[in-house]
Image (cartoon, rainbow over all chains, first blue to last red; front, side, top):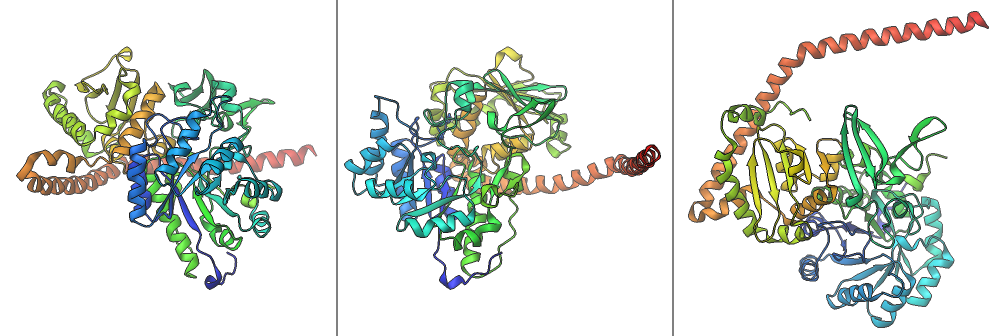
Length: 337
Length: 213
């Protein structure tokens, strides 16, 4: 752990996911500073069946959070369909009307719309925009007044520490826990290739309607749009049914070609990330249940508070809720190099 | 899925001689209460009104058929279900299914660890999971809420029952450990012997390679 003077540290915000009103309450009650949510349509990157907020639920959720000193951020982070931006414009207008604390946007045209129509609305740049260098971030800040950028999960802690002073007063938000993508955020076409639907345009990666699990004598087979993408033996930990986490045969060997099912967990790295000048820590998982939300938020609340108080990091076991039962520090350390 | 050795499994064996329809009034009442206290579940399930989901508590001798039709939802208890009668199946131990319904465990985590089996239309299963998780169900509070002045005493009875079940679970676990102890000891001995043999084979291969060099 890096040596830290806890008096000199800025308290980072803990930004937590909520796919339902119950999850929002769980996040706030567990100590979230901010909760990010989406509308019940394809304007957000977790457009899953049975998930997300109606306008009324968002209004009630914002009231619940604000009464307890927490903020609500609305993710409108898919890319509007060419010539049909109305649904996305309406989402921005409704988030502003309902007094959301900020909107998280990815599409440059939608950012331009929000900036012009709601100059008082705080804008955050979604990870889906994949802005990872000084020039790109400065452009969004100078042209549209973007206040915070969610960094793609491709940078090391050292790179983030070097980036922060160069882009101030723009804030950075980094993922600290949850599912990982193949580091081509906003540009991945794997789901679209197999199913015709993608997280970028439709808000859903490997849509459940295209997923099938088939019990076999040797375990279970997962299929996406008819493609067999993985087979798990009896008792073997499973992962999400996405192509990037499929096991394929190449050169006669069966392996995970893109990435293994594993969850990001940076709990042990919190001191380094705080020292790197990161403003906000983001927990992935709006598609997860409120038990996940409560467990992860409690762990990271305790972790951040411990670092700021100069105490050792608490030993929090999150193995049970990780994908594939495994954890990684991802690109922050690039342990594979 | 093999059911775990638990108090529920013992209860299931005791229930086996009875016709499942005997329990139908209980599930009708449960559905009425949940529908009244959590109307948002059926609202979230609106795109899936014509689907039928089979919920299979693997440690009980019956299954439940859920039809999430907003106007006339049904939860039917049956001994078995033919594959073409349901669009999707969710299988798991009763206690896991209840914990999932009450949001005490995460559905993805259960799936990752293979404690839950999903078959058929994954979309309707995901929708149902999200709808139920989002409703904030508390089965004891929900079911006792309809008892008016008897709600508080009923809650106390329910709490006492759950505590008794918890003790029973501990006893059943002790029994399970005692039953499998000989098998576990045998497996440990075989593992040790296997490790010895592997070491021997490794040493022989090494010696063989040296001989050829």
